[in-house]
Image 1 (cartoon, rainbow, N blue to C red):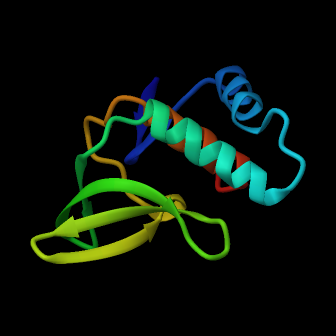
Image 2: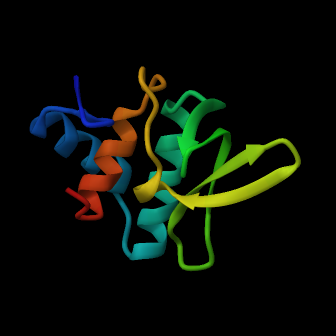
Length: 111
């Protein structure tokens, strides 16, 4: 795994295996979203710090929004904001399990 401009570089074969693991036995988009959320919750080390729009935040948990998009729940002091996981910048070093975020991004077509 290498970094490239704040994104992780994960081998294509590894990403494909992760996509298969997250979506196996899923029959629709809602089930796929739940499968991804489950795998991310199992593998991604939370909480972790990152920077969103120049502000340091703590990613406390992941959730699904009403459209079944995965969002990172970011906290700074008493403020809380849901940030789409596809748009969340990863810190350096990336948290353990961040390769699952890259697999999700690939699955969603965000390359």
